[in-house]
Image (cartoon, rainbow, N blue to C red; front, side, top):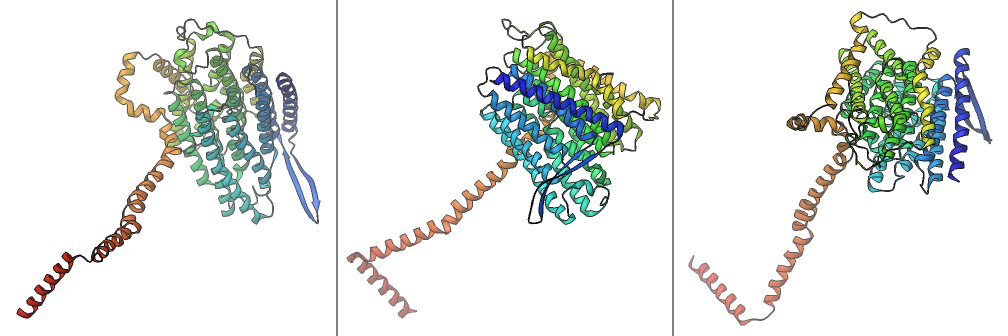
Length: 575
């Protein structure tokens, strides 16, 4: 039965996705926007209205979500082979897609919350799909981190009661610059930062790798983490100067932190997860300087090659007996030529290799940053983080493709999963040609970029220097690793996402619990007991013991008291 579910879901989503894309192309060419109010029910003068916004942004994004989801479901047909709960898995993925659809086409904050909470709930169910302790911990971290964003959206809904409508699109220009809209914008930014895993909410994204690889391909390309970026793109016209600077700083730091961490990482899925975090930071930096269309362009191209990258990683992990350590790989191009080719195409598209999908958007963004008015710190963060992206991409290439096979010698690596290969072929074609096609479509009129030579060649310089550093780092010898132990604190700090997973879990819960334990042991179980219940008990116990001793009518006691009173009377008479 599961094959029919996978195939039917694939065909339906694939066809609907291409229909949405073609409508999106038509809306771009004819500059159309459809705003539809659906009156669901009217009762005693009160109406329940569902609002839909169809423009080129929502249609193109929805089309990409459907197409990538269709290919991921086709890929899951082989990847999840033998799973007894495959039907439940596919249904959860479809619920995930439906929640994302609600978020994309809704200009109403309440219906956005419906999709937003749907993404949070289904992501939790998918992260804990493999029912073990690690998955449960990752799922709890994921859902609790996203709860902060849910609270921010609920506060937006409560505040927008003052405006008379929950459709934010009415107020983007009308109330732009007002203190009310600044407050709403800040809450939207907070919600987007939690969903897109920006600092300080970054720790849940690598933890969500506990989910099955097809889910990771969907989450990191076009659904969960991109929901925050999409919301920022929609609300960007009402962001003020200080809010944009706030976004620029934190997204730049996130991009730098993720790029640095990926260069210290050896887990294949964690490297790709950190690359997603880095690209999300790049998108939000682009939104913060007012280039929302360019951020959306990179969002679409990133969805293509990131889904392919996760699919290829899943194929490699599947063939290597569920081993994710890149040090066990090597010479994969000999044993898995097709998967390795797709992996390297998506990997180089990620780092911005010329004329692949990622090049058109990343190069455009870097040149617009170079031409714009931006402070030196943000400019330095952007180009340094871009160099780190190239660095870990070439490092992954070296470990995966160069050298000899480092896994168990008797282990055979084969490519026989045809559905997995068919799913990758579709994304491979789009990762090669999708960037140029979207460039011609979204930017039909070439932008005038006027830069001096040193800034024009800075992008290529960063590309080549990052690739060279990645190759050098991957080729370190054992003695170099021993030398690096002298800098263990630096590598530990850089490779653990600046200790954010600790601060998001034990760092938040352990200190209050430790303080509470000490307060309880010292006060409640210590001095309070000594001076309170237990102390009073022992006072009355001792007094009662003395009183009982007097009541024994002992001759020794009587004689002792008689002598004592005689001494006292003599003392009084003499003095």
